[in-house]
Image 1 (tube, one colour):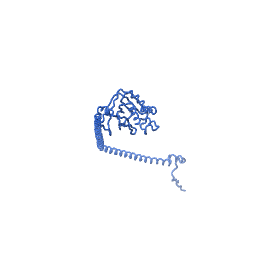
Image 2 (cartoon, one colour; image 1 turned 90 degrees about the horizontal axis):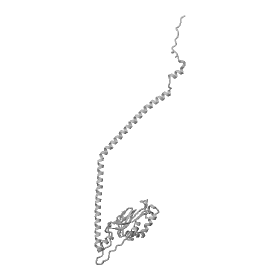
Image 3 (cartoon, rainbow, N blue to C red; image 1 turned 45 degrees about the horizontal axis):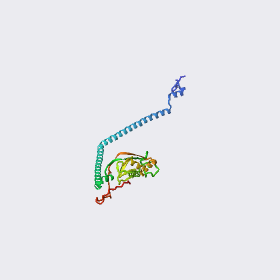
Image 4 (cartoon, rainbow, N blue to C red; image 1 turned 90 degrees about the vertical axis):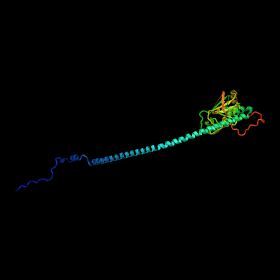
Length: 306
């Protein structure tokens, strides 16, 4: 009986750890598919983030380059136009200065002509006034005068609103009632004339028989010349008598009411010497001197301020 060779198995031999398949699987696959997918996704996002960051840097660099170009072009244009602008500005300044100088020259001519007219008027008054020509010129305000008198300083009430409107003492608003108005100044001046003043000036403006005290808005005008407070009224005459007579006159009593009721500030003092200038202009529209052989009487001048 023949012996057959032993049959060998063709399957690979079993691993020694074949009985520990679960442990083997854990060791061979330490990361499952989910972890592997998450890792791959993060790597892809990292590459994309780097790409976006690079694009942002390139955009920023481009913006900075564009801004630099704009600034450079603007500076170049400014350097080109600067001489033109400076030239135009200088031309404008030269024109303003030239026109101002021309206006000053014309104003000097006006002042010179006004002085000449006033001098001729004073000479005419002295000529036609005969023996009393100097007195006529003095009473008419044609000559500067000086002598004893009084000084009356009048001012608005304290904390008076300078922008208030309306007539004096026509409203209950203290900012209005506490202001000195043109009609108030008329009362004061007429009271001084009534008390015996021989010549009066307000803030350096000599009053005559034809002087007018008016208002333009909130300003007081004397012969169309604006005045600002405080108002200094100088009156020529016997200081002691003039001061007492004014306080008893209608103008003095009116002033006292304004002081007591509305806070108008006023002080009067006797002066040993006051100096009043001549009137700026003398305009006589209707009065004419009479012939010397028909009228030997003294000239008469009336006083009063409207």
